[in-house]
Length: 163
Image (tube, rainbow, N blue to C red):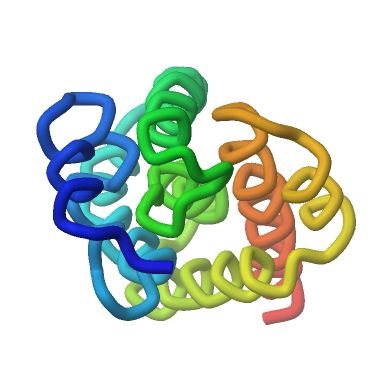
């Protein structure tokens, strides 16, 4: 379901709206989740330069901020998990790419992490599907993508071990 002009305006008039819709990437008329995951790669290029403990701290802060922002957006839009809300994709994508902080981060590995995250986010294997259906509010919006990001990070580590 796409948002009407007044809903898009409500998101863009508030800082939580900007965050929730991934700085506007979630307003893409086609595949907003994929657009959000793709745009999330840009700040990740800066985040990947952080030492590992600071990277984890940035993820925790981004998650907490996302819970508030996504909850705010869902309440304003009166939609439980609006498609335009993609901050959860940002955080999930950053979790998926976390292994690249320690080892190789060529374009191919970044692409693999992106694809793994999108696959787990779309397919929603258990417990991703459980979190998506059962946990409400901003925490629920964020949690399923965090779990999908963890799955993607594990798949990336497994691929690295196999290769």
